[in-house]
Length: 190
Image 1 (cartoon, one colour):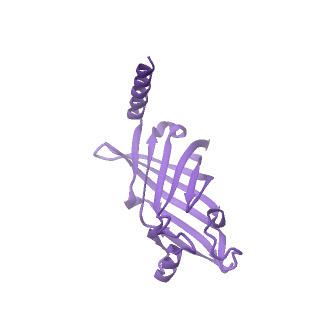
Image 2 (tube, one colour):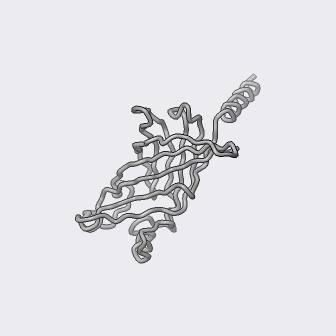
Image 3 (cartoon, helix red, strand yellow):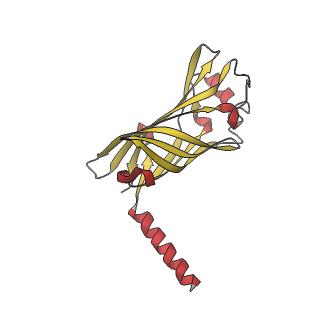
């Protein structure tokens, strides 16, 4: 009896997942950006160039979707090679030991038309914390081949010290707060 119950649960779970749409991030139309205050007078902008991620769910009911995202820390790019090498070091991302940052959603809350709060777990280095991204849903378009492309802008601000990115802990040269802005496009799998 237990075996039959397990088989039925597995079957209906698989059937439910098959009924959901799967979207994969489109790296050609996505950017993972950050900015941090420098010397208290201006900002340094940067981005990560290698990442992947996806959405499982129905865009007609975004609140029930699941979102996941991975970023390769070694792909950091601030357009200054010496600074990028320092960011890859143990002073900052320690990319040899921690090659990826990850995000996985726990819930999505609709605030108003096309505006959402994306709640989830963000892991940087050896620290995982609850975070909330402010998300603007840009909509969905259908390609000639039948694929759907959905667009989002997601923003958040974190304290880098919370994630053991602790070089210059007083924040005199490098600010403690990091603003994250993601411009995202996901394509449906056929």
